[in-house]
Amino acid sequence: MNTIYKQLAEHLDQIPNGFPATESGVELKILAKLFSEDEATIACHMSLNPESAKSIAEKLDREEREVSKILKSMVKKGLIDLEKGKGGFDFKLIPFIVGFYERQNGAIEEEFAQLFEAYYQEALYRMMTVKPSVHRVIPVEKTIPVNIDIMPYERASHYLENAQSWGVLKCICRVQKSLIGEGCDHSVENCLVFSSRPGYFDRSDHIRAISKDEAIQILDQAEQEGLVHSTNNVQDGVEYICNCCSCSCGVLRGITEYGSLNGMARSDFYVTLEESNCTGCGICIDRCQFGALNMGADGIVEVDLARCFGCGLCVSSCASDALALRQKSGSELESPPKTEEEWRILRIEGRKVTEL
Image (cartoon, rainbow, N blue to C red; front, side, top):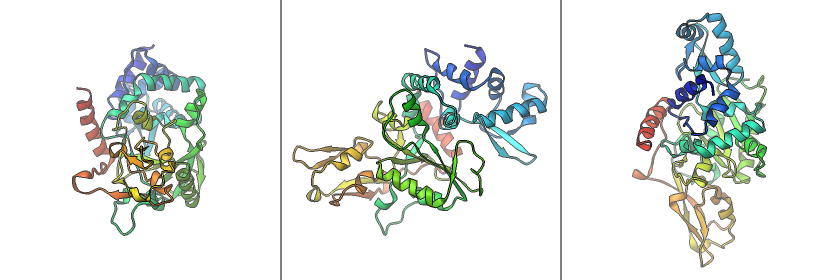
């Protein structure tokens, strides 16, 4: 494989999210499928911090107009990000996950899906073993106890209410698994995105613009299907909510297939059981994506708190009120990083510890 893709792979692995190398080199095939050699060269000279096309061109000793044209094409392909700067638009590198992989939603096909699966099984799952986690759980809002003070980041409605535009797109995890013949029965179009800018998704090719009410309906439908609400593991700057299943979700699979309880950050809650109310129906066991509930020999549900992530899916399905969410306190609480920058700093330290 061309050396430039090895250089890009190493460059991407310096991002706190990680891009682990493999013996097979399958990750290089993925990069070659997405980036031209010229695009890969330019990406190797970019960082997570936004820079002007002029600044990037100077690093490459190339004409600004030429580099700017390629950068804009890379944005359109979902390989890098663009934001408004002081003198125009700036460009920045984004990680593989969560990042330019998810932006291939409209372009993913069987070969790419097979490459991703091979990469996930060989090395990518290791990303899910590092703290702080890439994603965190948002509990089902109606299961949160009333009359208690909770942090805004624990309410999906907090993010939806404060947005000015909303969109929905297909879950790339379910699309990918379906393409390799391992699809599940859960709804596919239920990944929510939102923005503080009105009309932000109106011209998108792969995101369907929706209303706030439709976004709330999609959340409700996801809860009915037993899907876990999750988002990036920060308090501020949240721009999407995934609705995850252990059948397909790359993050959840880190827990269910590889046993990493760091795969997803937990909510501020955990489930409690009132044994006298339990009828032993077992519905909650089927709903739990984390394997935290089992049927005891006496026909009463047993809770494994080590595997409870506080999503509330079991509580919302319990007709006998045997299950409830309880808010953590004191040392039990582990608030998510405030910002993306704080998350990156902690993630770098977490990778050092994990890779020792």
